[in-house]
Image 1 (cartoon, rainbow, N blue to C red):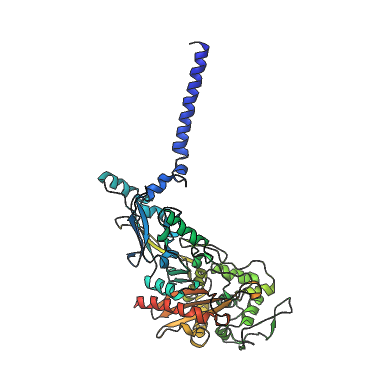
Image 2: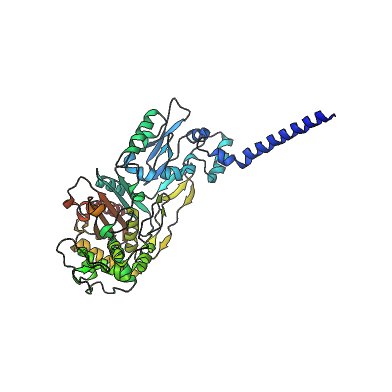
Length: 486
């Protein structure tokens, strides 16, 4: 072979080698990345090539699928009472993708999860069309309905837990949206999503998990827990050394109480009953930021929660002077909490000091309803002792029986609670948020803990209170759970 031909042969050989290397690189190294790339329409086409599995509540599906026309996506998602369940399901849209449970459990719902490999192989051999599995939730339909209807046309959110397991029983957020109106890929679906996305009331935001609010006076139960756990207070019926007025350390500013309430030297029980800022502000200041932070973090503050849907971290500040610590200890300054977080605080108290991890998926099922995975309840922490938790229960029950939480009373059921009216805006310029946290207790134990927050911009400022706006909603959710247990 002459020299020019040899060079050409070597060059062609190198080209073939380069092609082989490139082909293997794409097929083996980049395969997963390309298969899941957002611009690979084959992934989306395959996802909607068969009906999705369902999300289940109380043994019944709250989702479905229907055939579509005029597109290469064969099926699109449908929802039953979509607005009520959107904070739980999220959406599965051919146009904008998926969110929340629809996204996190997409592999099960589409049948593509690795744990369904044997099932898929068997179906392929038998010629059976691929099916999606089901996601079984911990939610209670009656509790969710009570929460959603209780909020009505007001902005707000509700989170309800089973204190003994951490199972989420209700997760409501308003204003809400119907995921079915943009489940397809048409121009109309795009217009509907755009309207929701641009809505100033943020209906696409799950307020129960993703919004943090100043918790106001509901945070005082955590401050009381810190006082008991750190030995600052041992007798909830002994007088505290709280002067009136009480000047915040390092300032000339007195911490004010709302109205003419008996807060001077008030006992811890009475201070919670009438919601004394001075007593709890002084407790926080006396304990100091480190002890308050330690207690707050044991309850879950400063850490994201996964239910499996992510919940934003609630915040208890780490850098404060004594005056700021006092304000933070009554749920103001930079303290901020999600409704889920305040339900967790309440559930730990109701569960004799044991905080369970919150979760909303109890089982994952294969298409044939065989169980793939079952969630086992897990202890998250023990933020207070059984003895101190029971002291707090006595205090919270006094709030409902003889204090600001009377609107949450349920005949024949022991209810503990705490109201909160949280200031917000520069110099308290905005209308306050109304909070209520509570638990119900029967002879069999405590089946439910609830946190409610209401942002009612239409109400008169003087009419906004946790006891007036939020407590009736919490009561209806607790009644729904208690009645289901009978």
